[in-house]
Amino acid sequence: MKNYLKIVVGVILPALLFGCNSQANKNTLPVPSPRQLNWQDLEYYAFIHFSINSFTDKEWGYGDESPKLFNPSELDTDQWARTISEAGMKGVVITAKHHDGFCLWPSKYTEHSVKNSPWKNGEGDLLKELSESCKKYGLKMGVYLSPWDRNHPDYGTEAYLSYYRNQLRELLTQYGPIFEVWFDGANGGDGYYGGANETRKIDNKIYYDWPKTHQIVRELQPDAVMFSDAGPDIRWVGNEKGYANQTTWSTIYKDSIYPGMPDFNRFSSGQENGTHFIPTETDVSIRSGWFYHPSEDDEVKSVEHLWDIYCNSVGLNSNLLLNLPVDRRGLVHENDIMSLQGLKSKIDRVFETNLAIMAQLKMESTPNTMDSSILTDGQRESYIELTDKNSKVVLEFETAKKSNLIVVQEAIQEGQRIRSFEIEVLIDSSWQPIYKGTTIGNKRIVRFPTSDIQAIAFKLKDFNDKALISEMGLYFDSDIN
Ligand code: FUL
Image (cartoon, rainbow, N blue to C red; front, top):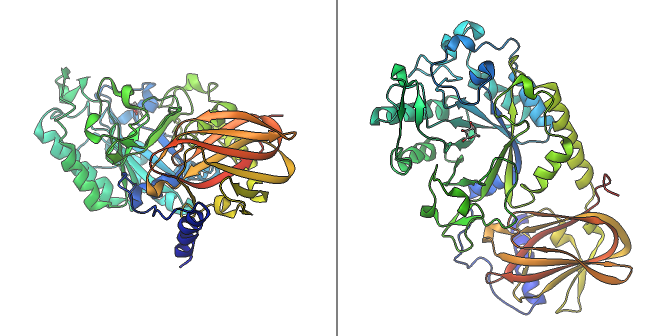
């Protein structure tokens, strides 16, 4: 009932204000599925790369490593989950199997796993431990299962696909709810392959027969989103640096991209008129490597760097998947924890007070002023609808507000529509342009030099059919004077 009221406010009231009677629900744009919307709400969650590579100082194991090398001395998944939850992240995706083929759970389909390692005398199951820790700390769990397997003798044949799918079934049935399944795009090349020691090339487009594998995920974990370079639910942002494109459409022509395609970057901005809603996920490691290397202990990304990444991923219509390379003890390293905590307190500090709550909302084509709650209630379902190009949404303050950051969100449940916008602010009674942007989507974070502002004017320049703005926020990052 509450939601119903909000939808009425969101659609009808602005329609009255602007004298239009269009219905936002009637559109033909691709829109997110409920599972994609739930995923988009998570915004920030962890990746963990931990496996045999953590002990061999490598990024890509060849596949011939002895399981005996996997021997963490103090492995504690509660420490991971506590760290992740205290960092304000909502979940964790774990490398259940990386390219070297070593499995962190005792898969019944291979000997190349924890069951032949000294860890817990071969009795351990890391996925089980992590799923229990996630439950304890209220985190969602996701799994990365590398399609490329440099250990398996059958890699490159049909038999391997059955093996891969059997493993996927194990992961999706033994460890409770899974929120995300991560299908890596790195595929094929040289490897051990059961002793063949050769190069195996596969055709990325056809070998994996992905629709069949996707079906297993839909059947066993219908709420899970699937990541790959090309979706089907979420897609790669196109780089591993942590920065989404300034223009980021969540829409794409699904068949224009495929996992592992060579010139993928051409499409990393998405395609405005794309036929499918497949938003981006930004994956980046807190260190340069994905796996732990002692030499990188003093090269953990700083809080400032992570904040910049956050603003350029979550703040550019993407979600942030931040990798933590668990160390040889089996713990998230102290230096990584310091940066994570620093980022958490920065995010808390900046977003503690939405100054826009104190504003009066004005639209150009009407003399009416209303309070700003429709834009500051944190509800995607309540939004204002604008149908005229060059419409303005103005937030006015009684007294000037010291600020330097604006957040704008579209009602993406109705599709992504805004192509370009500008922001002006009123300083000492004079309007000054501070920003020109393109897409918004789920969230756009705009940073600008600290100013005492009396009003903000959000000016729509261009959009598809109509613009639906669900949230606006004004904040002050006190680290910048
Ligand atoms: C890449 C892999 O090759 C890297 O090792 C890492 O797992 C990264 C997240 O994805 O494609």
